[in-house]
Amino acid sequence: MKRILARLTTNRLMGAATGAFVTAVIQSSSVTTVLVIGFITAGLMTFSQSIGIIMGANVGTTVTAQVIAFHVTEYSLLMIAVGFLLWSVKKGDRFRDIGLIILGLGLVFLGMSVMGEAMAPLGSYQPFLDFMVRMERPAVGIVVAALFTALVQSSSATTGIVLVMAGQGLISLTGGIALIFGANIGTCVTALLAAINKPREAVRASMVHVLFNVLGVLIWLPFIDQLAALVVAVSPTSVSVSPRQIANAHTVFNVVNTMLLLPFSTQIARFVEWLVPELPPEKERLVRAKYLDTDLLTTPSLALDRARLEILHLGDKVMEMMQRILPAMTTGSREDLEAVADLDDVVDRLHGLIVTYLGQISRATLSQDQTEEFLKLIEAANDLENIGDIIETNLVTLGLDRIEHGVTISESTLEVITGFHAVVTRALAAAMQAVTQKNEEVALRVIAMKPEVNRLADSAALHETRRLIVREPNRLPSYTVEVDMLQNLKRIFYFAKRMARVVVPADT
View 1 (cartoon, rainbow, N blue to C red):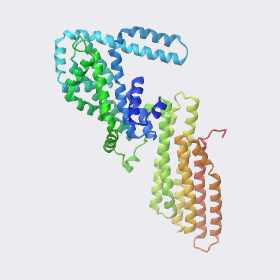
View 2: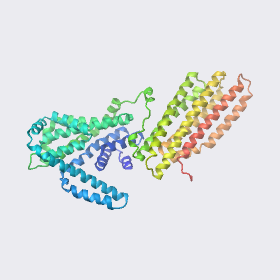
View 3: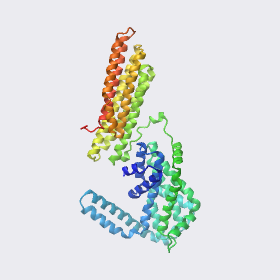
View 4: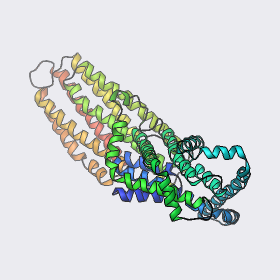
């Protein structure tokens, strides 16, 4: 399903169709949204493209109502029997899974049937009938359904109850449509709750869900009577209202909303990005992790993806240390060096969170491929943490030694160190790309940089030897600081090369 989603989001229409299809199959727009958030943060799709899938997911949720409206509840006992037999008799996971699907659907339809029979006496219960008269006012129906849906955390459950009430003649068509509108608003609470303490992309995705449903209800609110007339014309019936008409109204509502709002997905994306901006840098450091999601631990493939993204987040922090250490250790002040050292606290914290998260993943049953990926991710996280330690412990200390001994690095030596630092930084960036994207070609390029790094190291060593005999003050302390700087940069390349090697097959 992940591969299908990744390939079928090349444009908004394909994204909407994919979102509708996936949600119709798995009957969970929440799962679809989780997958979409993973693709956004992994850079596999733009936030604008994801809006199509979210809108399409709302269309996919209407399939449940359409199925129920076909009176499939009459076959619930047969489905339960067939599903139980497949689950208990057949051997192999595939047949057992199919049996559980059929058994589960049969139980849902049996529940609908029992609920309908239980509601039948309400048709002669005057207080209930008086209450349902109030549902004729759209505002009341929308508020009641929204609150109920927010409470039960399922718009499908609310829709099912409305269909049952329609089948028992307990509700009018316009009242049923108002309840359907309210269910669409109430289900937004689920998305908002799911986005608490999640990355900004998750919050934005939930806000798109809210905007889509609220705007849809506002668009249709003045046209409830016209929508009722349309579904009556499409699905006439001998009774005052039928489940089929409610189901059709639900489908028309979501399909038309998607058609109206999908062309404006880019504008919606910009508005949501303005509404939910990125966290300021000082607050971003307070965020314990950007991508780790404990809700995904039961699905190792998705959880490993999130760990991979968090390693990229960790790598960004290490890369920031790498870029800031060059000017700090060669010409910077004590405050500059302390600022770089403080960044290592963030690196250590993220490393600990990643390792803990990966440890939680390992408690699940992992396939051979997942086990190999798990071990590679731990090694990559450890290598990044080691690079952070080299910068914080060794290079920062060398910068402080430079200040303490009054060492001034010459322009020629600064040029050598800068060139060496640039090559090592390039190798580290490529190693991060290789790990986070599983890019074997890039990994091989990092490994192939070893001769270049050795050549530069030899050239730098020769330069330092020549500089040792130059008549300058503090020549010996300068030589020691400069050589140690170069040696530690070479150690950083060693860990970058180790990171790249985890991507390359062992027999390569």
